[in-house]
Length: 162
Image (cartoon, rainbow, N blue to C red):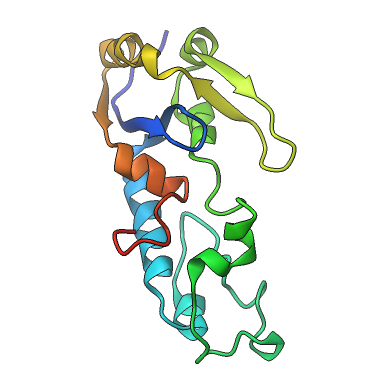
């Protein structure tokens, strides 16, 4: 059993009706990128959003101006193909594979396989108390933030709060 200090955020992922975990610092930065892209008013603005934790689904490698996505055209994040298809942002429940110790993944989670979006770790919401207690015994700091977890999963992208 390893012990370390790491700050995790957890919350109820509405998309998969399970508990999801993410590194708090990375989660906050990725959420800022999602909010910045969602706030873009034009395709030009969307293309200029810098991403360091995610990839930009509105980037020129995906949507060329000459293909009808001119810089001055109105931008709606919910109309971007990768967002419509559920490929962006990536499933938040996949992050548990990298932030949770393997023994806790095995004990509290179940690997779910999806045909298009990759595997994710399904952790019952009812397991939260026990799992968080075990993490805290290992010196993890754990904060509950359902809104952040769901934003990382793409929920609320079409609302002003995104």
